[in-house]
Amino acid sequence: MVSRTSETLSPVLYLPHGGGPLPILGDKTHEKMVSFLTEIVSKLGEPSAILVISAHWEEDIATITSGSHPGIIYDYYGFPAEAYQIQYAAAGHPQLAKKVFELIAANGIPVRLDEQRGFDHGLFVPLKLMYPNAQIPCIELSLLKNLDPGKHIALGKAITSLRKKNILIIGSGMSFHNLKAFFSREIDGSKENNEFDSWLIETCTGQILSPEEREQRLIEWEKAPSARFCHPREDHLLPLHVCYGVACADTPIAEVVFNQEIMGKRVTSLLWQ
Image 1 (cartoon, rainbow, N blue to C red):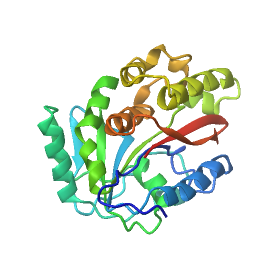
Image 2: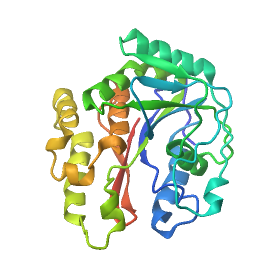
Image 3: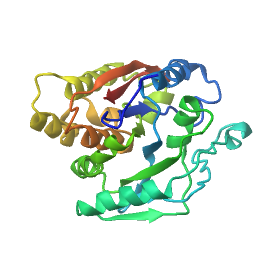
Image 4: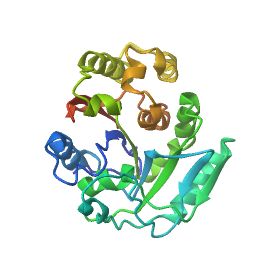
């Protein structure tokens, strides 16, 4: 386990949460992802709290869970009964939620607290694999319904000081998220998948890009090769933009910590530390 002091910046992690509850249900196509999530914890230290930006929560304005004991939202359908019995009893963190609210508001970004909302599977699926004892309090931050990449980077920049507070920040999405390609035998998509994956890795880890070039590439992500094939809708990509916004001032260059297939498609996880 990595040891972190008060002067050490907390890591920022963009990870894949897989297909609904399948990673927890023992699905064979998620085995590599499950191994990754259980093993990556050793590189993350021991956070005092976790903030998750989930692909499965969008609001008109940035919204933060602020309840002390959030419930579980089973925001998927068509799975076995056991998928609706999954529990993840991590406590909320109202004080942290208030701090995040203040940081975002101080940057002129509209924001609100939601004391009633529970944790969706963008949070409880990966964290149940990473921290199965649910011993670390968690809060969740929504995406913006406008799906504006620049505004999501700005949202991340507003909360960058949390890295000095031993808060683990996780963007939970998927670097490839074309549902038809995942489930259709008639659509291969491997060429498009690899093209966009290579672009994403170059954009987030390339040594020769200036900070301005890197940010502009992310803002104009639709210009990337096969961008719209890989993300017909960008909800699962934008948690990465928030992560980049959080990390870019201190550690703009990410490290690839996972690049394997999930459900037959190559998916990447990135770590800033």
